[in-house]
Image (cartoon, rainbow, N blue to C red; front, side, top):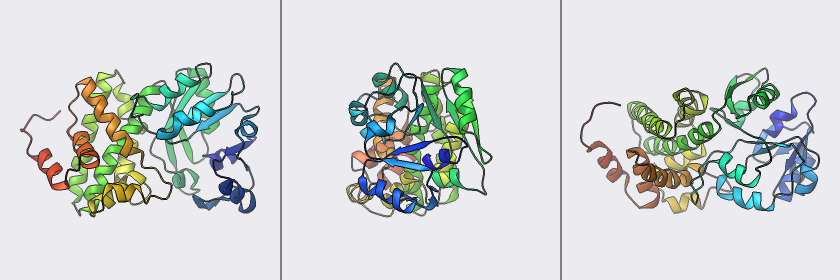
Length: 317
């Protein structure tokens, strides 16, 4: 996102790097270690000191993985008055069962919030030949329109929504089903299985929306259906699907998590939070339950699949 914003005219973009090695690599080579195919062209200024990085800024983009978000916010220096905080990370906190904007509101109540979500990996956002689009959610529609125009570009279309919680929640939930899609891929299952998974995943996400009064337009938009389709069909860009694929090929979850080389599969953490939240809300979530059993209770793939297929027959919903 820093590289993309640096391409927008008139913006000074700073990147707060946790590791000095990453900041040094960007300064010396112009390339970020995690995106070596895209040059910053010297327009992204890396910092390891958050006080320097945040001095006088108008907008902060938060991309920290949810398991580490509270630790970040607890040590975050005071932001300039009126600074807008926009999140692009996707997950549900396991302890408090909160979405990213809800966590941010707890620590930054005086700052306006927004969330950007939808079917777009970094490579797609930075592509010069392929278009992409996402949804920007903000409860202040005037601010939302300003952010919409700020982020939109020739190859990136931005749609506006006032459903801050809904866009963030749906972006988190789809990662659960991406893991299951990866398991099916690793097991060599057919395309029919993936089509069934996406359709029934959408039904589970709809139950969340109905219970939490999130409009169905949000579910069937880019941050819901769009992101679900992309991450479930992704051949290699989704960390969550890659985790599932390795699980489907026989690796243990412990080995997979221990060998991801700094990458985070948010769906692993979201599965636990979503399953607990579903139980709290009284929602039927058989796919989420199956994912929880596979990731946290040591169930075999055959056990999980059998439990799904042997459920009592019902009318489609």
